[in-house]
Length: 248
Image (cartoon, rainbow, N blue to C red; front, top):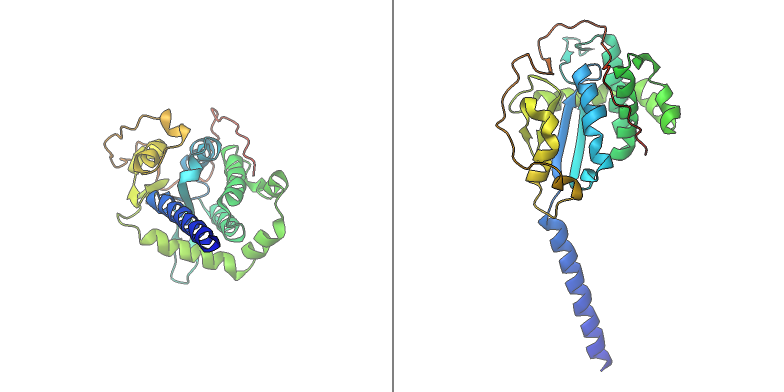
């Protein structure tokens, strides 16, 4: 009798593990990647006003988010990086790259990047160090990364990833869902996430139209920073910005 009981327990445990594995493998998370640069105002608006929503509405539970802060930057013959919006953008790209590296938890590094990009919208991006206090994060790991060779190494890795995109990046923000770019329909990224997920949908998907419009490439009149554009170094703040508190 005891042996039968043990066998029954073993079978039940095995079945439970099988169900758990089947459930987990049946619905993989949707891959969401954002290729961007720190001082493109359209990237800042997307991060602060759009992308942050997935952490408030529960959509982050079905998403693997990857941020790549490089964008329209270029690598020179001496391996130095030049950025579309000048040295300040190179600085912030590296700062945000280091945030991703030293705080691999996406909710943690996104909270810091969210803070920095909020300052960009307010034309206060030189105050980026204030985000340590605002988020409660220890500044030392990030500053060690930023002030050493490591920050530049990470940016060169992001350059390689960005330059390897197919189709090639032509502007930012460049949003990719499950390997497919959304072109200038990036603001509807949540629709694409819900449409791409094969498991039980979060409540947030219920309020979204799952009809996906025809994608089209930006023609320069849309809200993007084009690859070969020359831009003014002064960024206009978004006067219609909605202030959002993002908490770790």
